Amino acid sequence: MDASEEAARGLTDIETFLYREAHLQAAHRRVADFTARGLGLTQEQKTDIERWYLEEQRYVAHMVTEYIADRISVVEEQHHIRFGRWLRGTLTAMVLITVATIGGAVILGMSS
Image (cartoon, rainbow, N blue to C red; front, side, top):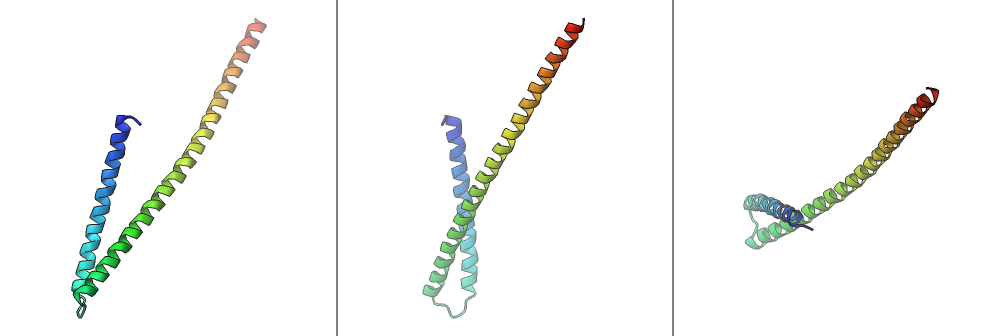
């Protein structure tokens, strides 16, 4: 891996980290707002609810990220297959056109 690929990978890792942190901060605000409205909850209960919710959000974010990565891999593989078929078709057409052109030139050359 060259330096530009490493830099691109590093930027992707940073973006992923920042996105995850922003998601978790938003989740923390949502659950804190929720537990603040929970009348009769002890601080320990509020903390337990917040901990559970944040763990659940981490799990969901992980599952979504894995699904997206898996789906991207499938789509990339499908693209490579389609591109390979297109390339083979184009090569075959070019060979046939070349053969037809050379054959036509030979036939015209013999008839002269």
